[in-house]
Amino acid sequence: MNLPLITKENVAGKKVLVRAPFDVPLNGSRVADDTRLKSALPTLKYLLEGGASLVLIGKNGRPEGKRVKKLSLSVPAKHLAKILGRKVKFVPDVVGPRAEKAKKALKPGEILVLENLRFYPKEKERDLEFAKNIATGMDIYVFEDFPNAMNDHAGTTGVAEFLPTFAGEQFAKEIKKLSETMDNPKTPFVAVSGGAKISTKIEILKSLIARVDVLILGGGMANTMLVAEGYDIGKSLYEEEYVDAAEEIAKLAYDNAVELLLPDDVVVAGKPGPRAKTKVKAIDEVNKGEMIVDIGPKSIAKFSEPLKFAGTIFWNGPMGISEYKPSAGGTEGIAHIISESKAISVIGGGDTVASLGDDVKFDFVSTGGGATLEYIAGETLPTIKMFEKK
Ligand code: ADP
Ligand code: MG
Image (cartoon, rainbow, N blue to C red; front, side):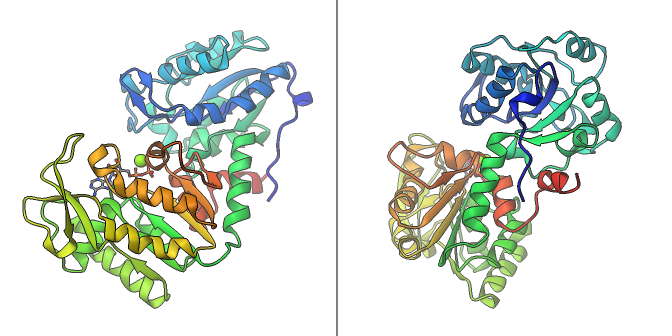
């Protein structure tokens, strides 16, 4: 579908509510990676040039309905002021008298950031009274938070029930890119999935199996698959309560004639870390005291075979503990192979994107992780449905 975009002519003197991508990794009281914030700059500048005043809402992290000081949006708001080169006001509330007063006082060209929506349980409950309060005093709503596009919450789809709603440029671009490459993927379609836990991606993996020709699994999530296959993985991270689900995934792949690839060899360490001592081991040689921290060279070579001949590649999730140099080789290896392949390559995920060096190139690097996965697995995102309903 064509998402409705806002035009400059329509925003002069208007108060525009923008759901913005404030979900950024932090390093203490600093923004560690501002890729997402930067992706929203064109929309913000465009609206400001048009003479609008902006009220920005969003969430960061998972404060689970409580005020968590270090997750205050004052931190990304300050960073935004810097990269936008403009003053940004901040109120440590989303609703209530202080927020109301600040919204009312806002003049054309001014920007106000409200507090982390997830400090309020009503956000995830999609409380429409809460959404209505957020929308009060605003003229237009622009959704520009693709990384949270899979969330059906008060401050994503709820506010759209009270205001004329438009798609932000970046959100529309992500959807367009993903639909161009993924709705009719050039075959063979190879998906690579990694990351820490299988539990967070299990449903998506099932849907992915219906769409891909080859599914490559690495990282911590592969450990649970390996346990399901009967391997002893020492003290590696895995999820006991998901071993049955892992077996189901293997069976589903078999029934759908999807080639499922798991690591044959792994990098192990006593303890992961920036100076960890590592060893390469065949998957049936892992000892009790060892932890799998990465995939090994044989696994990289095995995974490279289908990647070389792929028509389309989608990748989400590091192959190992990529934050630490001694366990980043597998992720870097896979990044290079995908970068060099002729396939159309799409990559998504906060940690995956953070692990990339400057020497790799992909057709599309999405700012989303979960949202990208859901889209690729064939789900209709609630933030797309909200436009269909209008
Ligand atoms: P993304 O943010 O790209 O979607 P995830 O958040 O799902 O990726 O997963 C990234 C995390 O997975 C990283 O913190 C990484 O350290 C962890 N991880 C990957 N492999 C392993 C492993 N073998 N053991 C423990 N953690 C792992
Ligand atoms: Mg992550």
